[in-house]
Image 1 (cartoon, rainbow, N blue to C red):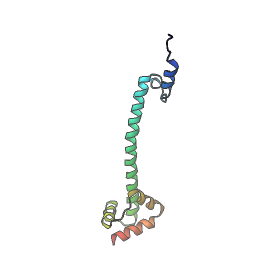
Image 2: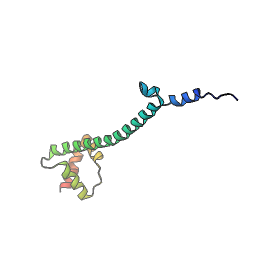
Image 3: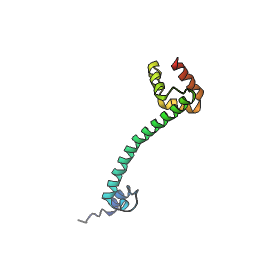
Image 4: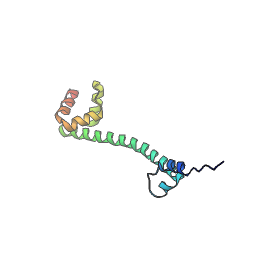
Length: 113
């Protein structure tokens, strides 16, 4: 019986993962290690991205609110929103703050009353 040579199939399987430079693209074991490391970094940075966007929205809302009313702040606005049971999240409030400031001023004035 003839010997089975696996070179072609094994090489095709290993070349699927060659995305990196140096040993990370040549050695199978380091390819898999690098792939796991990349997936861990991607997962961690997705959480960081959410955090950064939330911070950005808070900064934008606070800047627009403090422009008009000096003694009023972001934290008091959010507190009053919850008390009045208005369902506006920070992303929507930040978009309103950028695109139409007067609308955000109207919302804050209605909440204050």
